[in-house]
Image (tube, rainbow, N blue to C red):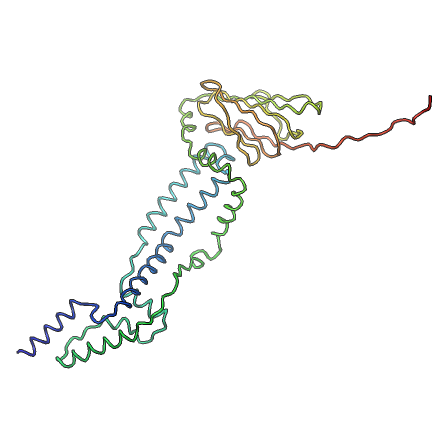
Length: 319
């Protein structure tokens, strides 16, 4: 009875100490491997969400919302929010916390260990005599001591399997292109989420605009005027340095005034009036947009300045 009791006592102690005989170095590497697996699981689960956030941010920094009508701007924000929520919930459901067994199997695989020596450290004898249990414990300690030189490998999220077409590279290219207009990032981010401009739809207010285009004096070209009743043509040829005065009437919030990739600021001149003045230094699509409408879209083509030419129209004569 005494030997049976001692054997049961040893088995009970072994069952309550799952890492009995496991050197501290292996314990540390097992914990680090868990963190590596957790990092890999995080990337695999959250890659759609992170990629979506990167794509939306890139479009905003490139000024995409300012280039579309406001109804499209609203649809863009609603669709983006829905996709972000869906991807976030899916990432939470897919996220897994690695177990100790998975960490040991990863160490065995990375160190090319055959016969699963690390996983066997958790094995338990079902029936064993006192001598057999002692031999098993000693063998386990020797096995654990021989595995002190385990190597850790870097995380391997393997995103190329999740994104075989390399779509994530387009996000990096877009951010690189947007970096050339870095100084406009704050205005574009603020404009993308300026929700006050969407409220005026309920007021059913009519919006009008007035546009003056004044070429430099030295050109001798007359100024041009356009408004709601006399809209501009699809293309306008103007010399560089022309002055633009744009007035916008009927909205509580300022309009979006964009020429090419430059967004110009406006100032409020009345309760429902706004004005913007700037000098044309580059060509491109001139767009003035109010709440839920785009009131003006016209292409501005720059006329290049040519140096003056001197010609003699008649022979010189002696008097």
